[in-house]
Length: 372
Image (cartoon, rainbow, N blue to C red; front, side, top):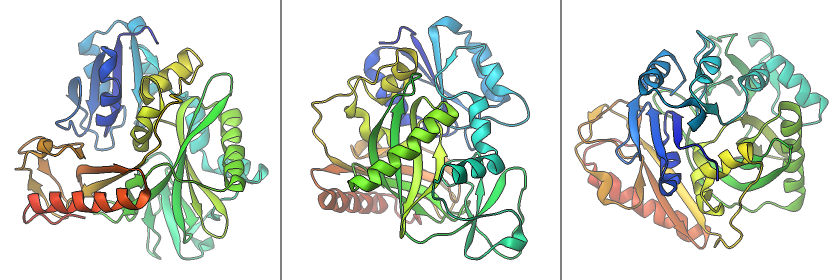
């Protein structure tokens, strides 16, 4: 087990991360843009809506005066661009995750696209300019995760050349694969998820939920291992990372999430001390600590979003299948997430039906609230 006693989470939805380390008896500090009621630990508000590391995060850490050698920091979002916040963050503790230098290489779409082609990795066609676009197409952001930066392309769409790129839209089912790797470039697939998304006030394809432990055929798994191997060796990825892909006529790579993702909590019991401890240990101690005795279950979760602005007036803590619970009287803006609904069972059909029942219960509880 890693020796540091302070664990700092920075992001915009870190509730499940804080729950994963509850049993470790460490000091947990959450710097989160939602500050949900079921966060475990000491909670501080990050005013950035995407949970980016910014001047406010640095200010909070300065006031905490943590022992640098006794602190690990996990960033589940990205870094604001006005300063070198990665370098600033290093002065407060050990950052557990990929180096910002390698992340920036992934976000350099011109070079990144070239390397994908060179290594024979299938991906949807990308367009250099609006004149080359073949519709239907998408506008995607290079550094916002969770679907926040994904929009349908229209003839009059404005493109931010610095942060956005154009990509052909493919019909098919979207998936993600989670993997864990160490600094020796050894890696292992944790699980494959079926991914769901919704149109919200902010984006056309907002990540909204997942179904765990999806089974693929051996040819598909071999191809995913090939892609993971490319990222681990080319970009030195370590810890837990996720890759989004789509199965259409073939498998197509969509994007790499070089950080812990929201789906990781689905596999918390797959590790002896939980997925956060496994993420930290894979980097500091170079081991994976899998729990080989786990009972494999199918787990679902679905994020509910609001169509209107309102103040939450129901205590959702009374439901054991609800997480990311907003505090009473919290203002929920149109397009913002309200909470997360969970279910699990020994087969996918039962888990899905239970999820739908749970969603219906919460919709009935939140009377007169239009929910996406």
